[in-house]
Structures are given as structure tokens and as C-alpha cells.
Amino acid sequence: GAVVSQHPSWVICKSGTSVKIECRSLDFQATTMFWYRQFPKQSLMLMATSNEGSKATYEQGVEKDKFLINHASLTLSTLTVTSAHPEDSSFYICSARISGVVDTQYFGPGTRLTVL
Amino acid sequence: SQKIEQNSEALNIQEGKTATLTCNYTNYSPAYLQWYRQDPGRGPVFLLLIRENEKEKRKERLKVTFDTTLKQSLFHITASQPADSATYLCALVSWNFNKFYFGSGTKLNVKP
Image (cartoon, rainbow over all chains, first blue to last red; front, side, top):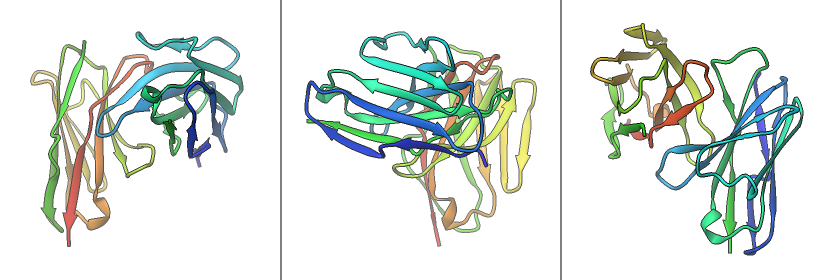
């Protein structure tokens, strides 16, 4: 149980284009999902907290107009990287919490974004 | 801002031995501390959580200690197996589970 999927698993795009990454909780409802970014050999950095039916909460230094988050249902959150540039190339990982259970987050397998 | 230090060098041990990984932190007082396992190209998998008022937590071959005075957590894997080879991350967690601060992880290699 508690499986989280991400799609796509990897994507290559041209500079200036937008890329959408999906995060789904497959067998549970998730009121809250988190989006992280991880550069090679570095720690996961929390980018934003996504709450179903409300606006996402962004961490300091993360541009909300560049990283658009939508959490339209209890099983799906999307992250759109707008006008992507090479410096946005990274490993993007989402996690989800079972609604009502706060102490555990279940991570997706991650999405490798490469911007040319 | 908070700083989390995990040994950036890989830890190489022989199968059957106990692996001990260290997580030191400063500039933050977490209410909880979590340990995760991460395999290459995959998302982390939750292993253990320990509360600030707990000294030690065990789960099967895993043991975590938490010293809030030293600002340090130790993660032990007893009777290690090659399948335990992975990167292990510690995370400082706020009281309301809304903030997670991850270390960069320590890579463990268990040799047969």
C-alpha cells in the first residue's frame, strides 16, 4: 500500500518550453503533497507544499510563477516548470501524506528533467 | 539557517558487520528526526522516526539514537547485508510535520 507514482520518469526539453510533472497517490487519498528538488549528490530541497483545493505554499527562494503547482484532487498534484532553462535541470520528487496521517510521507520515484 | 551534516564519503563495510551512520545538525531544534533509504534514481523510502524525547528506537535490524544535546542522531544497521547497500538520508522534522530538512546522505556499501 501507499504507492506514489510520477509521470514522466524522465523528460528532455528545449530551453524556454514548459514541462508538466504529475504526482499521483495510487491507493490512498492525499490532502497534502510535497514537491522536492534534488541536485546530484545533494540533499532534497523542499520546494513547496501542495494542499488539495487551495494554493500551494512555497519555500523561500522558490518562484511560484515559475513552478506552478495544482492539486485539483485528492490523488493528483501537478508541477509545471514554466519557461525552463538549463539551470532547472534536476531530479524532481514528490511525496504524499495519507489524509489524516501526518508523520509519514511516501515518495514517488522521481522525474529527471533535462533542459537543453 | 539549519545545517545538516552526513558523512559525504561512502561507508564500506563487510557483510555481517554493523554499519553506523551519523547525522549532525545545527541551528535547528527538530521535534522529530527521520531516516530514509534512497536507491539510485529513486525516491526515498521512509525507515524510522524518532521523537525529540526519545533516546533510542529500534525496528528489526535498524536502530536509531537521538541526542538533542549533542544535536546528533546515529543510525545503525546490524548484521548488514549487500542488499542494504544504498544512500541513507536523515531529515529534521518540525513539530507539525510541515517542514522537512534533509541531509545529503551517506552512501553505504556492504561487501559480501
